[in-house]
Image 1 (tube, one colour):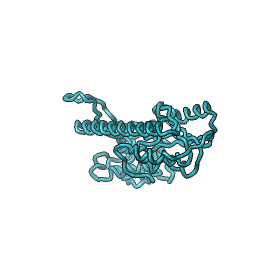
Image 2 (image 1 turned 90 degrees about the vertical axis):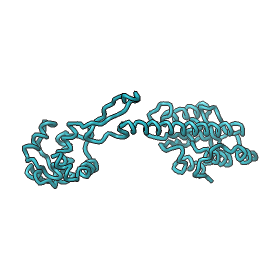
Image 3 (image 1 turned 60 degrees about the vertical axis):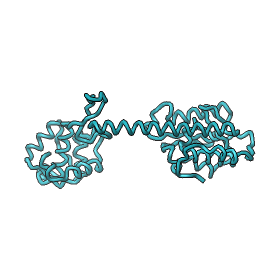
Image 4 (image 1 turned 180 degrees about the horizontal axis):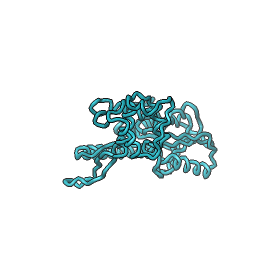
Length: 300
């Protein structure tokens, strides 16, 4: 029923022919609420957050004396209908009101949204888009909803192109894109030629020392225990070893201390991963990154 490819424009003729003979019953009181955000960061947007969408849905149901039988909320791209939970509604319900904040929360795939609306009408599922004041029990409002989803798709496509273009330009200017790796910190500056704000990275002295400590314990130290003590004292007042496997300071000279012991040592001595406790996976990434002998000797 649902297509994987995005239609460029809504097919209104198909919509008209699909729903013109559908008969809807009135006095439906049960309701299902549906809310969607594309990304976790979008969920912090008060206008688009799941909490806001479900909240206004509850208010709408109270005003219309609807009985809420289920609330569905999820973080998934509106372009990826195969992963959206709203498709399950067709399998589980009929003769209900489906309450959604606005058409863009349903989907950004015009063809799939149109097919879904038709299938809902066949099962006497009436879709309510609260912010647009649309109740899809007439051809007129169905057309308006499809056009609104199409507009949201166009807006999203334009925004994606703008973001991609901005990222490409900043990368060309030498700006760091993405998460700042452990061992470095971000420094914001203005490119002199273009006036564009970019982000450079530079070494974070404290985090570089922590990397040295981790690699010393895992690979062994080339500069002796005095150097290891000095690194510990430079970032932590508490330098008492608390290994889980009975290792001692002397074993650090040879390395081969397992990641679990390193993790406990760092966490118990309050040598943290950016205010978070270390996990073995994070330590594993660091020792793999500095596995090369040249890098290890440079660090140690």
